[in-house]
Image (cartoon, helix red, strand yellow):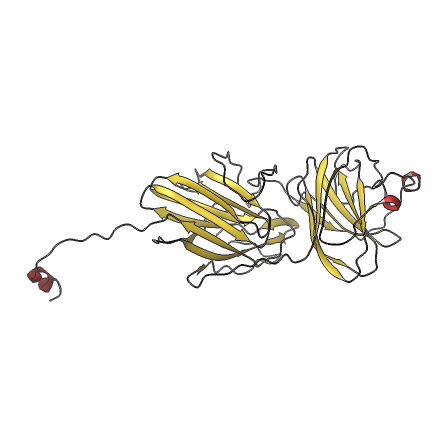
Length: 352
């Protein structure tokens, strides 16, 4: 198991999230996503000419009229026309969509919500030139962010499977970037983490992911504490990583701890038990999983002790470093200040 990934955990509670429940793979995982830019030649299978069913091949691709775009479907029942260039043991039914942008655009293509092990590959122009390919950027799904499209060029988006598998999917194509209205309150505390970068290992508040352990401390307060943070994904030694932010707090009173996050990217939030340190932490509430600009929340009734709040991008690839989020924490009250009665003579004696 990679020392850089968060260990698998058994979830003890569920978190509240806005919107309908979503069945996705656990993001406390050791899955290693693979992303590749494709520049090698591509040979067109003869089955393209023999196709005919809508969505079955390039010549009969489903038409994307405009952006943003979303569609649900299944790859089951389609032919295996296109071999994914970035999937080991390829060969599975695939579905093709086509879009011709009226103007230059940058898009995020998302097939993260899937019922099977899927991959995504993109081709351009009448010669079907390979542009990009992704496998496992988001669990069993795939995601390509920051894809540049040229006006008037036909782009073909192929949803494929691994080793013959097929199943349901949700395709979403959004104009990049997705901007959220994040109004940072004047009393917010700033995480202070430098933006992540490709080729640079992120060691800032990485928590229990690696040694030496590193946390950002959330001080107690009588009101809601808001932290303005950043996250993203990056490449390091040919592997995809995400910027995970671990916050530590020491509760002085038993009570209800409430946490929420509004982020500019698909986000994960959890409350972890840190009373036994990094050697024995466990999940108390979470993970809560949300889309970009969607508020998610966790809460748990806790005894005094040390706890961790975990905030990260939901996926391991396709999210720009420096993407902003706001973390709100309520219920971390300060201990009472001890007051002892004293005579005026005792006070004068203390400060003589």
